[in-house]
Image (cartoon, rainbow, N blue to C red; front, side):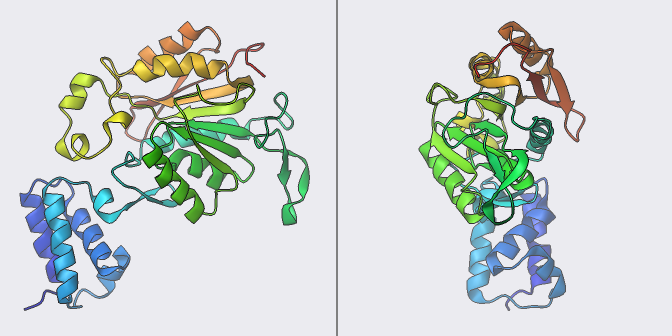
Length: 319
């Protein structure tokens, strides 16, 4: 006898719990909704609905993949981040709630950029008049310019563009496969006109005169020993390039921080996501660069110092 929506959810929840899932009910709901091609709320409206044979087979296939510890986001092919629904594949890191703290810090920094700030314009990356109604330049408004280093799915860059109607964002990554995902997300969200997505290793491949008001990055920061001990759903599925930060987790940050100092406009802000317990060491890296005001840390919703950020000292900057 074919299962109902309610019965399938109950059975799947029990099975996933026995398989070691930390969120068996949520996993079951998300996977069943995906198998049926509906939103989660629809499951609760029609718990008596009977699954077709094709739907049951599809749901069973998803459950088997989840039993093998494949992340739900990869099975579904999408993940919510802030107000966005993003495509995700194994080519990109799955966006996480703690990264929303980095977006908050970056949005605050962008909102503080004074009109007309910065040096000479870089083609496509201002300072330029912000569009007003009908695309006309709005008097007195300028577009701040941000750089997202290691964009992956594009979650940070696209969130900035979605929540600040004036910012223009350049997003880079060393993985062409990741950039393909980011470009599809930008196009689907209608943000491709303000988010430029390019292949590049940190800041090394950018045109020499390009400068930014804000630079953000969620770099790989997990120490190598911790990476090897990660849970299988992370270690065996998500891209190592986006996770493994070298022996102490700070290898990429040691390159990024001084490079960013040379690419910020006067008064520009660099903000980076860091791992638990790394904030003090990363603040020291900012200090060692010799170009920033004292760095600050911002805690995520779990109370963990998750973002370290600092403003370029007066007189510094390449603009």
